Image 1 (cartoon, rainbow, N blue to C red):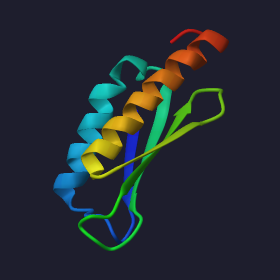
Image 2 (cartoon, rainbow, N blue to C red; image 1 turned 180 degrees about the horizontal axis):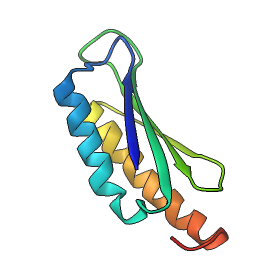
Image 3 (cartoon, one colour; image 1 turned 90 degrees about the horizontal axis):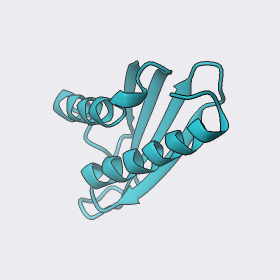
Length: 102
């Protein structure tokens, strides 16, 4: 399971942040790892300010299926990632009912 983390110019894209997000994604989606080929995380902000709302978009690519994409907006990057991961877990479970089992 390959995890790519991208940030826009308004979000801290330091190695520490990238590693933290990658670890969170890996832990949260671990039970689906055998079917997931790649996960792309896109972190962005709506304006250049410490008070700017943050957005996390997750795109999960699964073998022989269309990608699943979710987004979540929150006051911080951590909360945006956490919210997007919860949405993705739900989407993967729902997808499981319509497709082959995970």
